[in-house]
Length: 140
Image (tube, rainbow, N blue to C red; front, side):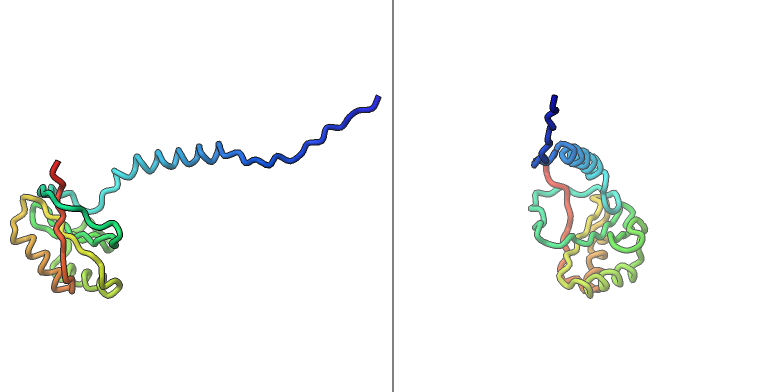
């Protein structure tokens, strides 16, 4: 009685099911957390029918002006803390020394006086920003 030995040949297939499971879990996590990550200060933007920024451009530096006229900048140690006039100008100048083509956008609450928006833009120009965009909510 001789026993036959079963020889197991190596399998040349990769099991991708665990990889797909992990990718789906990551996708769900990103889909849930992406809307929760909102940079800057909460402002109620005016509505306008405008084209969005070119996605090939760098991420713009956002200067927010809240309903009370306080200014915030999206860069630095504390982006949710109001900045003084000279601090805003200094930070804009620092950004432009690193990237001269950096885009800048002002997000102003719709209730803020026009004078406060112009003041923020003037301070940014004093820091060296040649052009500043205005952020609006799309018309639905």
